[in-house]
Length: 498
Image (cartoon, rainbow, N blue to C red):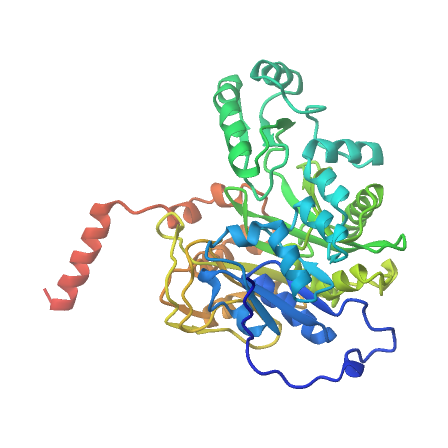
């Protein structure tokens, strides 16, 4: 039995006042958000501005989550912290029972599961995202490569299909040259990827990647690409409607990574000139058009040292870092998703999209950067967000909130905007010092270390940035026990005046 937990009294809203613009109101009237945390709160806010009723879901671990408190309605999906969020049929059944006419998957969980889109279609519910077939096709990295080759979008040299044996992999690697990357065919999020610099490493990692692909994605298939050494990771936000219109909202630079996980994102990239920016935007739109894409998506590229662009993958969902695109363009990506899913045409043409200034996003994770980024879940004893011009915080935490250990460690996103690069750096430093998260360790100090780096401040970085700067690597190294004991002893001695 589905139980309902209302988040509190709501002011009466006249349906005729739902939409203040002169266009027809969206067809969608009530959305179930099949997610949790900060992205659920973000979508709830978009619904509120559009006069759409928002419906949250929660497990025992999320009973006191901010998304539950802010949504118009909230439905319990069971005690298991993960199973409820990953159950396609339960999500669709709850949406039907609650009278929802649409589901927004957010990111993670079911967001790139074609079965959710398919079940929505079968049950008469609008899926706020692309079709099941596009999700399936672009989620298969080998099929995505083939589609891009057919569309004339450059791809990294690699295997034509999935690898069958380690001997086949060794033979192909000799042809294309080391280093190579072994990748899970249905992978994502930086998982199921191994770089191999020689045949010994390839032989050693082949079974590991197969195992990772099976455990993480339920698909024991892998393929190979030549490793683009120290590339810049550039991605382009695209949006496309069901009327044949597709545009891009410029690019984001996601090169600052640790173990293939993004730490800081920037829009637009300070490393591109206008010619390169136009080129990569055109490639992204071509990629989206070639596969019949609808809704918001992200086309990710690697930029080589010779400034060549190579297609890497397409994320068929909303990205964590979408706020920085919103900051430089003024386009609300989530609201556009909802409008497109309602069958409305894009509000903008490509020539209407202009960029202004720079924006940067910091992922505030509940991790201890001085202890090898060990998760630091627990109760937040005090929290206050920064403010001032050009500062935005997307989060789902509050004073007294208990961060559950079952989910991703990201507890907030700090988004900064300024007119120029130097002002952005200064404002970001100020805002990171303003934000207060107490009771748990966070990555805030690590972000401040990045901002101090001269190469970063000059806009010179690639995906090797963290590993190639010893001061950052040393900052995050686990301290030997003897050092910790010595520091504690010294502190006690100083306190006692010895």
